[in-house]
Image (tube, helix red, strand yellow):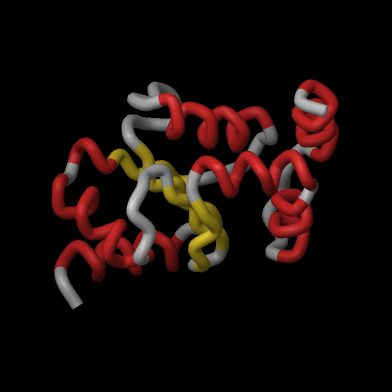
Length: 120
């Protein structure tokens, strides 16, 4: 396993929710990363963010690790969930709520409902 893959594996193992993104959760550097971070932030999710722009090995390595070509990438309890489109769909359908509930990840249910109401 490469150094990047080892660091990625360690990060997703040590944190319940991890978002590999361009920028940080406080300052996303692309629209797709901003959308996913915005959903997680609004729902009050306690998550770790990894800025792929700060580390080229991680930026390339995460795509190989997940076999997914785009960033952002969300992991919950060590499992790859998806990118921006998938997270958006899961948020609007309620599947993301279910995923968090099944994995014991605390979130603001009222905030999740407000996202759905605003986009319904």
